[in-house]
Image (cartoon, rainbow, N blue to C red):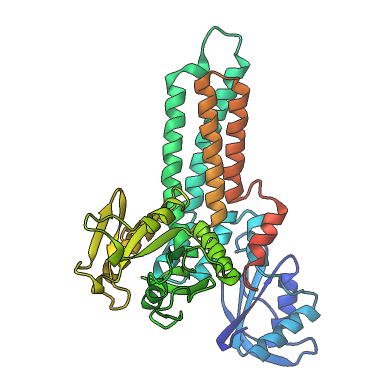
Length: 441
């Protein structure tokens, strides 16, 4: 609990008006502020402030709500809460007001999550994206996809009812075109949701490469502090080191890892194992190589190439040819055999701005955030599940397989989308969502 000039005690529920009247006397007409003394259960004055009444269902929770707006001293607010409890109220659980708003149909689950995201926003862009989700833009897009999916389900299941007719309802091109368009619309939504998730959760970037390639020096350069020990002795970093930074207000987690090499030292072997694990969990990999080991044709050293070939396929990565200050190569972009990256010097800072610009591009910071809404990992997982299910249904129809299989996949896709806004959300999911809220929201 903080302290400040003002503090609010909120009451919600069927007895809110009765309890508030015992605390503050006669209540004003709804949505009109009036000055009142707040008294404890013995009648002694606790504070003086404003009383606001919101009658059900026209309130945030959909129930009768009263706000007592007094001074923000924690001792005063605690006394006011104690007096309310003495008159029959109970303390709210974390997120219970938002949970009641959801259960009473005032907001959907995605909007409820957006409330917490707006409170926790670490940047202006994240706050605006959370506000768009709270306004229902994300939910509206999901509902539009759900309505289109329901129409597809009606068509497919209707065709099953007329399977004895001499008409190939499911082989018509219009159905396949509608499914293809639905998938395109979903992909567009997933792209915006992925950007919104980055605004909320940030991005994890792993620094990897052979020992003494300059990973720790680069970490210190990007962090702006001596976060990692730097030594000319190879293998100084034995464990995974994480440092959180902000890039244009977007949170990034930099993960410095042990140099990749074979070793007889059990501690270093464990460090290498953890380094590989960190790479698999990262969303972007910065692979550092000593620029002095690159040949005249721009080819990497054979050992570096072996390490690159062993990395997970499809994982985004940039190759950084470090120590350009010790070579005759100027800092700047580099590419060879389909790999892209930069020549730079982590020690002097040469070429770092080009790297930062590439990170901005990868994070989407170079693009406009208009239309981006805040999203969570579970939203992306649900969208992905829906896409897989509809893609499977599309394949089943194209193969001429049993239409019942396609209909079942479409049903699964709709259930995945419904998990985002909440119609079919499990109780344990609701518990996890609202338990992360602060008390009072």
